[in-house]
Length: 123
Image (tube, rainbow, N blue to C red; front, side, top):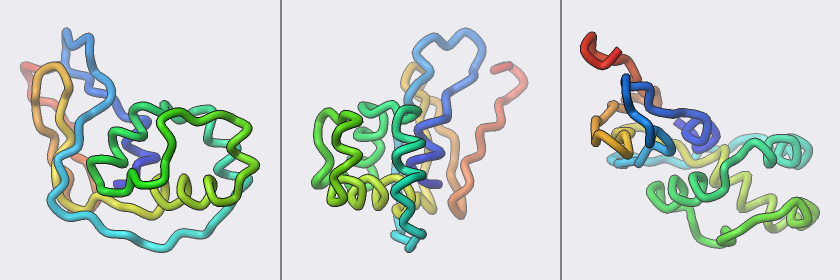
């Protein structure tokens, strides 16, 4: 699971109000090359919740070089775009769990795929 995916997911357990972002418990993380597309990065940037992205990057060990706050002006800096690209699209959580920030419920991630199925009593 890439941080792009993580940034879009929320916990949907019934009654949960603090459902975003999932905390990440990483067991196995891998870096896989992905095509570098600065236009895609500029397009997706406004949809990324930066604090959640940084939290995920920290959990996956790819936080280095990413600023505390990011602005649209930074999208003109190729070195920023390279670091953003690496963390967002190349670092992959293969094994671990996503943890609901309110309930602590763990959703397993296996072979890079998060299992967010809810139990009957959670719907």
